[in-house]
Image 1 (cartoon, rainbow, N blue to C red):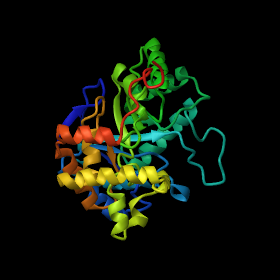
Image 2 (cartoon, rainbow, N blue to C red; image 1 turned 90 degrees about the horizontal axis):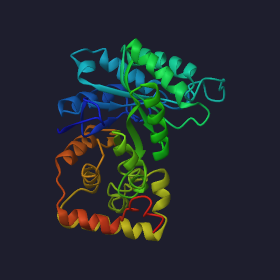
Image 3 (cartoon, rainbow, N blue to C red; image 1 turned 120 degrees about the horizontal axis):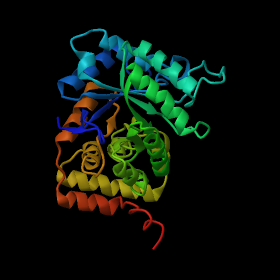
Amino acid sequence: MEYTQLGRTGLKVSRIVLGTMNFGPQTEEADSHSIMDAALDAGINFFDTANVYGWGENKGRTEEIIGSWFAKGGGRREKTVLATKVYGNMDAEGEPWPNSDKLSAVNIRRAVDASLKRLNTDYIDLYQFHHVDRSTPWDEIWQAIDVLVQQGKIVYAGSSNHAGWHIAQANEAAARRGSYGLVSEQCLYNLAERRAEMEVIPAAQGYGVGVIPWSPLHGGLLGGALRKEREGGGSRSTSGRSADALKNSTVRDQIQRYEDLLAKHGIEPGEAALAWLLTRPGVTGPIVGPRTAEQLASAVRASELKLGEEVLAELDEIFPGPGPSPEAFAW
């Protein structure tokens, strides 16, 4: 496993990030523990979760599963760079209460303590803002974060689903306070969705913020969706926006070209999609969310895959990026 530093920090993290969103809803606790053990054995030290994972009436369940894994000892917590998120409402479905969500200093303080309890740890390495809070000023957010850093409850702060100008605004506000600011940004970024290249990634690079792409297979679209469809696995091969995308004949043709290209070179589509992200400027590592041990093994193979210049050029032809800003939308 290769390692890199997270943004401008001295923290070393694996170039594959273990996403845990399936732990609980789709993967039982024992199997989740086995996957985390296998991840550590493979050298993956960067684990990502969120306080709302578990969803519905089980919000927080994923953090609890990670916490019970840490409780087994064996250096599990010490070997893991732990990232979680705050923003979503943690009240019972249909019973939201004011100040139980978003990024007010009150909610951040309460949410950190609740996550620490579920995770069975006394500190979080990377505490991430799951979404933009348009109602809370950055000075308030950084005041809350500075206190948590001083208390030893968190080490670094990161963002998720923030625009390029949000990253700039956040870190300029932090600089005025003498705070460290954002060190990472989780964004939707993959071969089929490259809009982050216009402004999010340049902003992240400019401020020393590591980019952590989520949905690297675009909901299964880039994981051999058409081949699985032909083999009878179509119902599990795609989801959400990707399933809808395949209804578009232009997208289907694009994905067919993609799968044909990789078949010619003997490369698994999902592994190629991950390997491509590892070649992109500013990318720390993509988040993979395995439901099974084999899916984790595939992600590890992707981290070792080196795509040739010919393949990279052909992938750019199939999935052309938007180009940098402002040239992407101006002369």
